[in-house]
Length: 304
Image 1 (cartoon, rainbow, N blue to C red):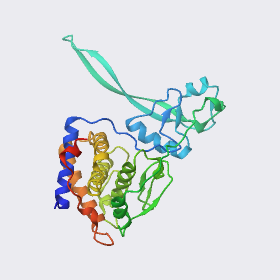
Image 2: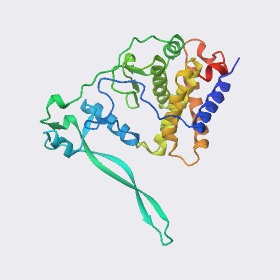
Image 3: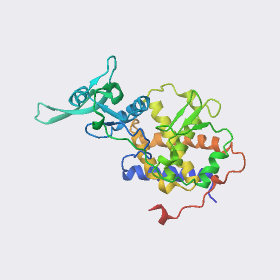
């Protein structure tokens, strides 16, 4: 029988292995009605820092569409009086010739300003793309459901949100409708991620009290994202759904670990913190939790 400690080490090694091999970019595992932040003209979804910044703004305004000032004008519209835009940042590589004739490539941070569609007026509705949520018949996974239902100290879970989040001030988790996830396993992986965030509350492990910089993209923020996704990966393994989620977890981790120079060392630190977070969940089960042991997955199944 595998102990929970063995599982922590096994999952950490699986993620390190995938990071070393290279992983595909992280994919948003759901599609809510509001949709993902994108340029309305080019229909390209924003990436990296811009994605996360504009995702929050899209939720506030109720539209996933953004446009530059000139794009608004070209569509026959105008920016509403008093509205302020949001920066979209990107790197531009400048070439500089050295004295020896070689070329030096210098990264230069640039930005331009975009406005949410709801900050504009006068654009014909026929030019606005429709937004529809993904919908499928959600089939609850018993072992994952038991883990959630038996956690005696679980925060409130509020459904039908446009994105997944944990709100420390109110100690609750927001989740999209389970039907909007592309796979049932992805719903649980996302929920586990937010529940691991919640273990940092002062009344649980108190992990959040040790973070000094809560700004989006800071090292503290990035570390907390690593902890949450590592913890989610542990819980996915414990509930037997890791084969459907491990690659996207590795991709998500890769997107945040780039903040650290010693990335593998930071991953191990985050893994240790995630282990404590998961222990907090397992130690507060209302009856012995069957998720602490899952039959080992065969090598053949793991390779799928």
